[in-house]
Length: 245
Image (cartoon, rainbow, N blue to C red):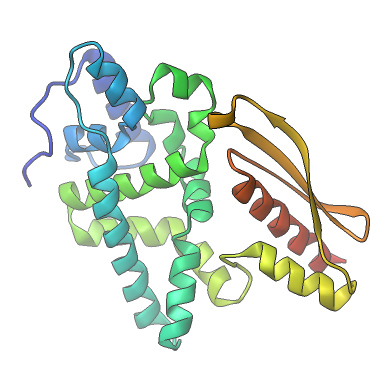
């Protein structure tokens, strides 16, 4: 397929893309320019534009990757489980959520190969859930354009199958805060209480560490670049701990 870009990569970019191909276990025939595009965050593009170089961010590829991901999960659920349309929709939304995709991106080491602007990189961009999830979807699009649907399908299932199985078994949720509230009301007859343990960084790149208490006891701690994500992670950890008790 035709490459997304017509630009030339510099030496450092070529090396980083080659390392990404090797580390992610992608074949050598992978289109390096499309993969480079998938790894380019807007902050890197803006930084290079200020130096007179025209690049494209991974936003268009993210759009395509989101659709490919949705199709693969839908087809997999339809072919392998006897689920209702409503259940399949819920499971797909859970598995393809920002939280899960960012964790998968970290687990495969995708964060190590992102092209970020200096400021974004300095302020923890490689651990931001939104950046990681978007990059994973962009990666999927680049694999699809370079290697076709079947390879992309196998790559997605390989990396998401564990999460799909947990979601089908009712062990993975899109909204852990709601689930925790249901559990605590049933078990403890109280509502969970969230509190900020630590917050650092300027307002636009704030990093939060949040704990969730149940009946005065901390059951889970979550961290992230938004209160919403940190609270969801804390709630998930609390759900796990309560189940074990």
